[in-house]
Length: 157
Image (cartoon, rainbow, N blue to C red; front, top):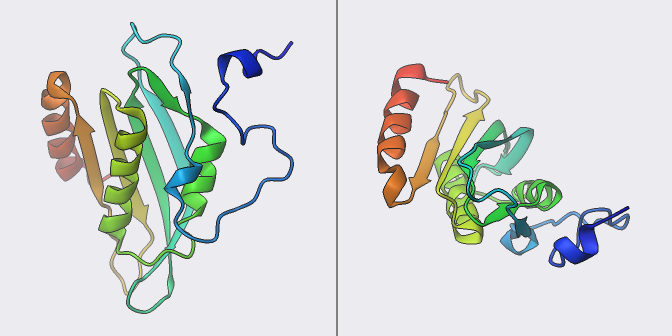
């Protein structure tokens, strides 16, 4: 028995057979649902191994694996809407660092999580790989923000 209509009235994309993939950057496709365990502090991880965007100067495609980790508060991002959102970068021209920071800011605005980080593992172009890392934490998670940022320096992913 499906409980979706009662529990998730704002979820419109999941199960929709006529999915339309955005051709431009589209943060408006992001949808949320209510966290049933807000009293638990737990980690949610999404991995998108086929992220693409465009170089803003040359228009050439850039490829990356995007990893999103977050500790939810009341709202959680719905995975199909996240997939469509990340797909919307396909024709979007921005530098790697900008893409990662835009994703982080959009998800923070959407969910107001306790903690969120976005890692971009971009494939080499011109012999150089770029691995931008951006994170956010509420007042109670500032130690985690600092420790994860420092760990990203040490680990180089």
